Length: 110
Length: 114
Image 1: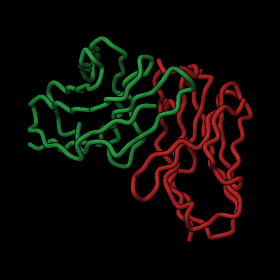
Image 2: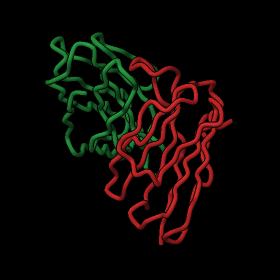
Image 3: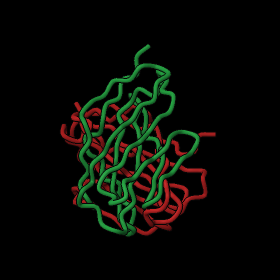
């Protein structure tokens, strides 16, 4: 699985969009980009995933660059409850094995 | 109803003891996992079972033995507990084993070995 690189931490004002970047320059053609988050003391929570196309669901949007070497998770209107560690994971189509890095600690402030 | 439930939520025990953590999922998934999150907050996969069959074993000491009596349950038994086993253990499940599927995690079991 490709290695991913994320900023250690980010801040966002409540109500604003939070844009979390992820670099995965060695991603291969069959690797999906996954985003999970972990709110303090809870289990990781799935957010969204994609292969090539941009994706949107009720939680977030995922923008993947055309060369697939990077992606951005967008929380359109961040709330205090979105404060969490966000993990970007590249995973191939074999047996699912989530490899969590250090993630980005997002702090949403009033 | 909780989708993936683990018991107990907290477990404090002495070195050398044997303990079990139970996990149940009511999502009808056929794949279950155990992850370990250490004090530095790194999450690492330990085991994965698909239809009660072990498919991933990530170089975990053989003191750790997962058991899957049926597709909905994956229990983790730990023998001769050591201080370094202190961590939060998460159970998870997914439908299928491929990459195009999401995993659902339980709330974790905080194990403290004293």
